Length: 408
Image 1 (cartoon, rainbow, N blue to C red):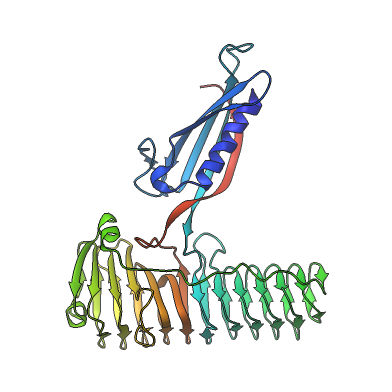
Image 2: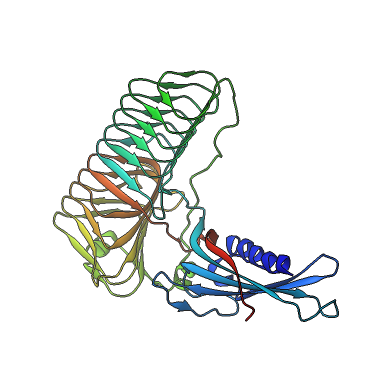
């Protein structure tokens, strides 16, 4: 019966990986097709990041869990041999949410531009993936704590570093002290390294592989399919979805939204008609609740614009130009020394999203038709849920332990 107890643990893993938060079960049960028949019953206890036990709503949780403990008991089916035989397995697992639709730290539908001293940090480990349907050039003092994927080509120079895979449909070129922390793949073209460029694992190319230091295997002349295709997700404004997520919807003009200096209840401002929302120099907006701005026009910020938490807790800040917004009318731009403190920032536009020098505290995601980042930019990947556009579809399971325990 220990096999049936283990089957209950595995069934719980699968369920956690494929179930949204609101539908997470308090337990899973099943019968194995064995002879004699055996069954399992697995109880699941959920915890938040501080280790507090969460109440399971039978099924479903009101908040996202950080951990779960599975206690699975296997036993013969009723009427089987030795009906009192039982074995119990227990597993503690870390849970990382999987967000449907928005899984990249930065998504640029066309070739982005980046400058010096750009760093993109991960949320849980090195998971800050960067994706473009164009080509990507990575230059001085740029570090991506995740994967870099391009449907075009990838060029890495000077001290550019990518901690995980680098994958281009076209060529990959690496020069100076650029570094790839895992595999490098060119689906249809070449991989070329010069100077002290370094690949820490394997290199696979559609054509040639030349020079440089490669710690793993080299596989030239091995063309393969392009990286998995992604399109810029669709976001349309649905007031009902925002209200269901706990937001108050307010229809405002640009001047009215620009005059907002603080928010104390979760609010989405729907700007209509389309206009240009401009924040002036030295503007400060304090959020003690979540805030979203949805507009068919543009958003721009002058020097030293500050968005900050007003109560010390982390709140979400959304800047959304919905799908269908006319370009370049729907551009998003910050100026020098724009700062975001204590906030999870989500930017979406089918047009251009540009970030200027010395933007600090950016934590969240950037999805745009084109992304432009200048010097001294640091970002922490913090995945977001966008009402009506995305949701948690399941959880990545990181097993801390699996062990047999005494029967409860």
